[in-house]
Length: 206
Image 1 (spheres, rainbow, N blue to C red):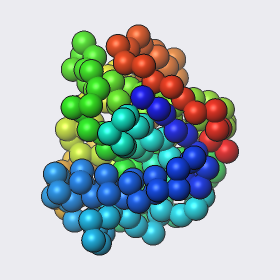
Image 2 (cartoon, rainbow, N blue to C red):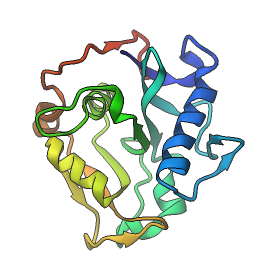
Image 3 (cartoon, rainbow, N blue to C red):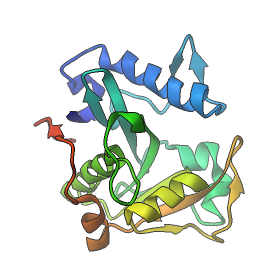
């Protein structure tokens, strides 16, 4: 499998942007039934800008995994769309904190780890950790459903709920705002031996 890291305009195939929006629509609108901005089979929103960073995984069938990285010094989802997920905390607004969003995988396309988590999830967060380490990011935040939070715990990624720590209504699901601890526990969780072969592109996340 190929792992791409960067802005979509840096991807060697121009058509990957449409493929990404179609993949997201299939996961978030068709499969999960979320109330997302879907038009003609494509799901995208105003956070998808030319400067947005991505981690994408592709196999011979096309895209099978993605995550979006947004700098909290700019516009990002949590305070705009899910302010209750802040759970009483102030929204981060500094460039050394980034938000993760639009995590999606097709788990049928890769092996599962002994803990039951798809290798695609592990690879995505391995690349996220490398990006954070390379760019001096001290914290990552996200809004996640309760099942996704449980996946992070199973993988061993250290996360903590924000503020009052209680689940809130996110529309279609219940969920929480979380922060990721970028420490050795995170590295140990994502740098595990995997069955699949994942080739990372040389383009850095700038």
